[in-house]
Length: 258
Image (cartoon, rainbow, N blue to C red; front, top):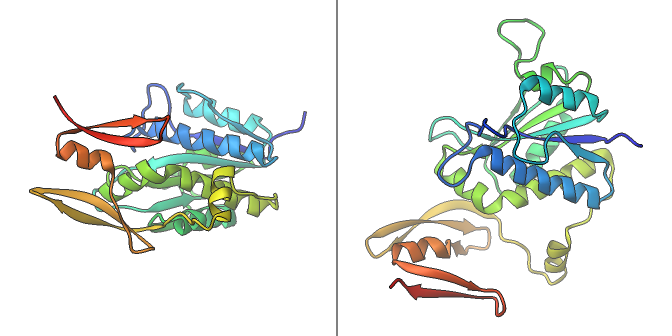
């Protein structure tokens, strides 16, 4: 049986929900969603890939790194959501101090190109042991080229809304960048391919804006096409309406609450 070239690591899991959690999502759930999407897409594209966890289970640092080391993979992508001050935002990728950082830079740029705010690509040396990586995922995964991706900050309002709406786009951008990096043929997923053929390009969210609705202030997104996009459910909640989806006719119905 051939060894995988890549192992995807959904950060945290089980009793460890992750610091990048908020009222909209828990880090362990969002990283699993991102990772599972990437896993299935890469398999579709013919890439030999595996994962450290396929479900919501806890992995200790030693178990996690053991799975990565014994996978036989050349590369590891560990998916995370960041947390810090409310002002901190943007995507980060982190590589080993002994890596050239080329994969980390490629993944970072792909996510930025998809609309997430820039932050940085970096490596970090241990403060206590000179010549060792700060992050255990770099220290304890042997010769595997491990890249940690922090897709954005759960503690930042703008990042949170982007992650909640566009996580799949960032996951796909990572898939595309990895394929290009290893020389694997890449094709758009069927739904996006159809949209491209029909010349309906997905709008890129450039910035968040505020929309006044009576006495309420709502958050919206300004796209590269000059359009303002706002979540219908948020409007409905402010107006005390119910949102109903009729799948047979693909219709969204707003109703007054009884």
